[in-house]
Image 1: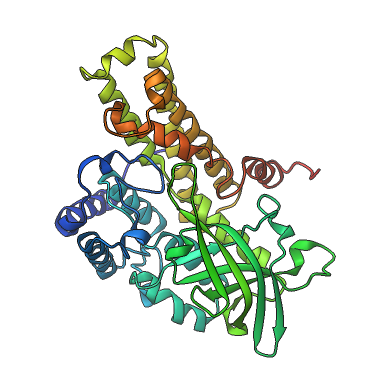
Image 2: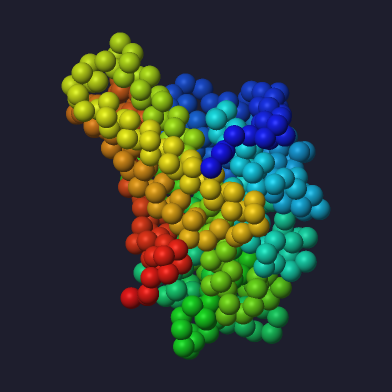
Length: 410
């Protein structure tokens, strides 16, 4: 396969680079050791859904100014049609845009809304739903969170128990969601609920609803993770009334709508560039006067780093292959699960490589005085969840086996 840019793609790549240089707000740039953040959900210390409501006025105004700049070009949701605020870019142009933004260490905007819900509504939503919800996402004015997982219904999502009972033109929703990423910062939630508890197959009794995060009866509680951060939350629904007009797809067929959303989630370039930059920073540090003492203690470290570099290039090529399928008009399928699985396990291997490089010093949690400001120590903690976020490795392997290899179900 030849991934070289065509002349048109090369010109677009230069256009993106010039745009970032000229329009990224100086007030939004992090200072000091924030640039050592290696967590894949952040880009050089940024987390746009959090930054847009930050207490620091410089960071908050910078995040909103960056969203405005991207929205002017339709680049928050670049693959969407212009009528909904997108730029109508091809899948390959969208890939180039996000690749260059990541290489420049600037954040994308409105990720969950733009990259998960938006493409799902374009496929399954009504004209009214598209007109109401897509433009605010494309302008950076409304943020979304995904309400799928529940206590006891993570890997086995079809066992979810949050109920929705129809009463006239409304559903009444009761139940709980958990591990909802950035839900405490969202304006809206897209949620799976059970509408037919007696369905012969559990997948057949699930419905996909759009719910306002501040609707009466919705309670959101942040959850602190192993690092001391709160990137996700639990959500409680108590008699929440949701208009039937907020249902995406048919009643009891929400599982198939959700699978489209998960396919879009797993199909992108993801953290590939972030891993590449993290490894390059590790090599640079180990070659520096401060880092040479660590490199000398591990003769096999060079080979391990070479393996990580090779794996990062494999992940990049997997992402390019997936986007080439999208460019040909295909929806992401099992290829997206391959990306998710390989990327999640690579995240953990890369974190362990960094920790091994620093030996006992990798146990230093406080950034001051630690090698690379403890970046890989924090990355190790963050990577623990990689193999079950967005679908566990077991689920991804099942998808690959049944859809990709046509193996029989157990």
